[in-house]
Amino acid sequence: MDNSTLLSVKQRFGIIGNSPLLNRALEVALRVAPTDLTVLVTGESGVGKEFFPQVIHAHSARKHNKYVAVNCGAIPEGTIDSELFGHEKGSFTGAIEARKGYFEEADGGTIFLDEVGELPLATQVRLLRVLQTGEFMRVGSAKVQKTNVRVVAATNSNLMKAIADGRFREDLYYRLNTVPIVVPALRERTEDIYLLFRRFAADVAVQYKMPAIALNEQARTMLENYYWRGNVRQLKNVAEQISAIEESRDITPQILAKYLIDESSATSPSVTQSAKVEDMNSERELLYKILFDMRSDINDLKRMMADLHSGYSSYRTTSPMATDKNEVKALLPHTTPIPAEEEYAESEIVDEVPREMTKADMQREQIVKALRRNGGSRRAAAAELFMSERTLYRKIKELNIEE
Image (tube, rainbow, N blue to C red; front, side, top):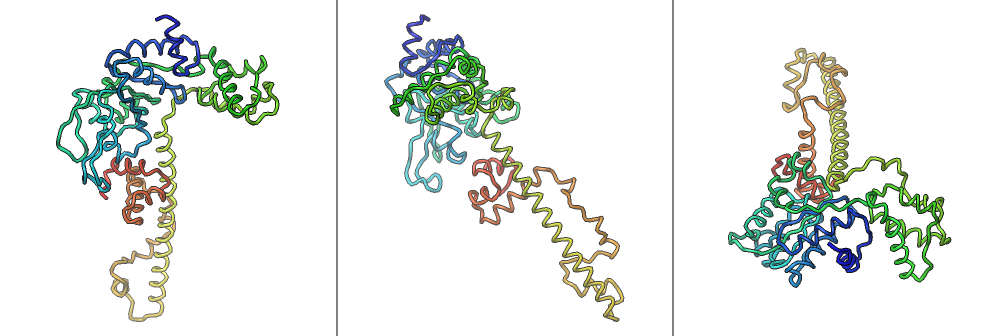
């Protein structure tokens, strides 16, 4: 493909850079655009994956029809089927009228599924059917409908690992990955870093009517050698911050260093999945709460048993009629059994999680308690458990909790 075509595409969509890896990704997008093949765009967060489905749609036979972009990670799990495939009136609480889904709206055009790795497994089955047969059903309907949609998907997560973990269907992966496009990370496009920085700085200068900042040679070297974990998005933020905050328009390494995160924490690259981070944090907070509540329950149990023991000893001392433990037991509430004196040794009540109780058991118990305390409200229970409502919904399904 000649350079003039690539240059034209870059100018039209505001894509900056001459890296061979970037050019290769654009060439693949332009070559596959006239077909109806499904495309999977992969790359780290912040690399600009959203430009490639736009390029594909604009150079396809569908360019005069609708282009619909959907962020799958931003739609709650309970409503994503309705958003994608539509619903019938009365199919669920709040469905006061029938509504078209994105696949119906995009009929004849292109649909871009961003963060496709975040789709629930049940929705993945529906998506697979659309890709295989072009058929779908609205939520609450038994009528099969047809759609003619070109699908371009994108993800910053490792789908092969998600398949191994049982979070993504392997058959769906191969359907989506008919034509793969890999968008390079910014650190792999060293020659483009300074070009992008200058563009971002110039945009800020024009927008706010101020002189543009300029890097000296040492600062430029530092800029190009930095890891850029946040890729183009992070570079843009740095350029805008320096432009807005610094009085001097000549940027030295000392000034630039103030805006760069310590690289020691960014020496090993990794693609971070937001839902995974959220799950780890939520799980940790949930376990802390379980342990604290369990400790409180054990302390309450200690006090209760001590009170019972004290009452029993007092009764033995003061009552000549109560000479037998069975008589004392009969006089106390039947719901509270009285163990023998020797069973009250402090060493037998241990402040730790019982070994036979698994982590899943503890999570299930705590979620059930939270739901009961909040009258079954997921939103209130999720807030109490320090997790998002979507994560709580997923945990309820994983742990087979009946509400």
